[in-house]
Length: 256
Image (tube, rainbow, N blue to C red; front, side):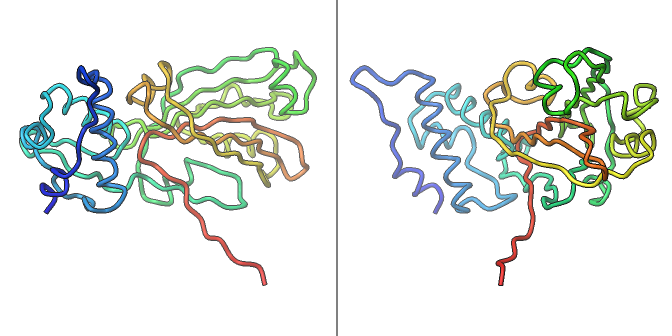
């Protein structure tokens, strides 16, 4: 029984009692492991707040903060009047050797989405941007920040730098209606061919937590990629922040 296995767990309190922060983190760790180990299956209802309070001998505030952590991580979902349930797996995106287009990924999965342009400006390229795009520092580049939402929920924040010299007319494009990939190929007259992708885990922080409607301490998967045209010219350097609960998936083949 779930209740029995939970009752066996103990929150480690010091001589004078652990701080509330320590307690809710400990409780979140225990509940998280129930999900990771599949003891609590997808869509299953977990014990109520009162049941968790009784099982662990903690205050309602401690339980609520622990549950909020797991909701922000995309592991639990709360339904008003029904309780708290283990969330279904979040959106997954295909990984592989082709350049990463999140607009194409969502479209392929039949997920209608809305794009909001948060910022679009022309600026002189900082040294780090110039290095990645292989242009002279100070060259004019476009900085673009977009948030994509599915069903009213923000799922992706994309931040990109592009050299305008390679794509005449790129700044005038309507990125709420057209993807970056389509705009680049239309304006440059060349195909996007490949990309170098790097994956990392980062804490959301204040700015991205507001954009993706999650907790500041929520762990996010970030994909950084340099995208090149068929000529080999870098055309975009971007960072894509995925909201909690999403994944990147792909097939791996053992070489002969």
